[in-house]
Length: 134
Length: 251
Image (cartoon, rainbow over all chains, first blue to last red; front, side, top):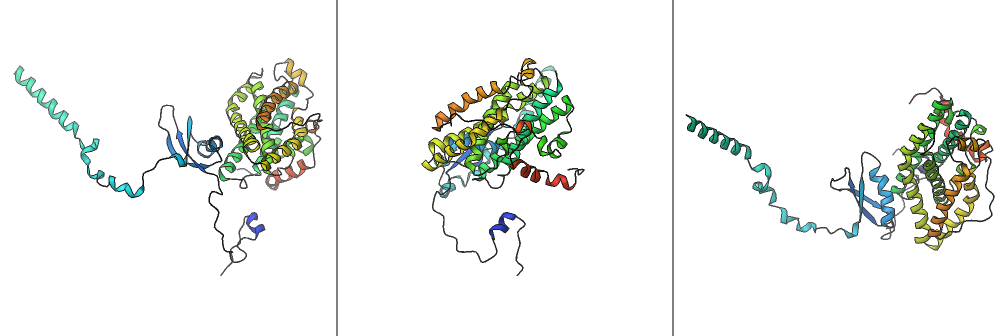
C-alpha cells in the first residue's frame, strides 16, 4: 500500500500517519467548553434565525465568538445567544404527533381556491347589475 | 499642511498595523479553539485592511509609494513600527495581552482621528471604528475572563504576559518628529494625549481583571526612528517570501 505523505508541515513534523494509529482513549466528558446556540437577525424587525452553535466558557465570550463565526459575512444587525442546555426540545420519539399533519391540506392557505370564488362572485354581481339595467 | 509630517504619521500607523496583523495571522490554524481561530484570523485580516487604507492615503495625499511596494519591498530599517508589534507571538496569553493593549490604543487613536482636519483621514477613521470596537471587545473580554474568571494558573499567565509586555506597549506612543506641527494643524492631537486616554482605559480594565500594571518602567522606543529588534528582519523575510520570487506577479 502506498503511504500518504501530507503536504502540511505540521502533520509531517508530528509524524502523524507514519505508523499504525495507537488506540484512542475516550475523552472525558465536557473536556470542551459548553455550547451556545446562535440566532442571527439580518434586518431590523426580522426574526432571529438559528444559524448554529459556538463553544464558549460563558455567554459573554459566546457572543464575542459568535460575532465572527456567524456575523462576518453579509448583513447582521443583532445576535442572540442561548445556552444549549437551556433549549427545551421535544423528544424525537414523540414526532409521531405530527405524522398526519401533511395530509390536512385544508389547513394550508394554498388549499383555498379563493380567487375562483372571488371571480365567480364578481361575475354574479356583474350579471345582476346588467339584468337590472336591461 | 506639510505632507512630510502627514506622511510620517500615516506610515507610522500603517506600519504598526501591518506588522501587528502579520503577527496575529501566524495564529491562523493554530488557535486554541475553532471559533477563536476564526475570530483572531478575522482581526488579523482587518489589521491588514487598515494598514492598506493608511498606505493608500499616504500614497494619494503625500506621494508615498504604492501600498504593495510600501508593505513588501521596503528595507527593515525604513519601517517605523514600534518594537512592541515585532515581538514573536510566544504563547496565547502574550498574544491576547498584546492584542488588548494594541487595540485599546487603536480604539482611542481612531477616535481622535475621527475629528482630524484631514477629511479623508477623518472619514476613514469613522468608517473602521466599528471594526476596532469589536477588536477591543474581543481582547478585553478574554483578558478580563482569563484573569478574573479563570484559574490561578490563567491569572498568573496573564500577569506575567502583562509585566513583560508593558515597557514595549508604552513604545506604541513614541513621540513623532512632527507631533507639535500635526497637533497645531488639527490633524492629530499627538502621542502624549493618546497615551493618557489609553492609560485611563487600560487601568480601568486591569482593575476589573485584578491585574497589576508595572510601575516606573521605561518605554521601549526606537521603532519609529527605524531602530528595530532582531525579530523584525525575520518577520519581513517570511512576509515577503512570495513577493520576492516574482515581484511583478498579479493575483
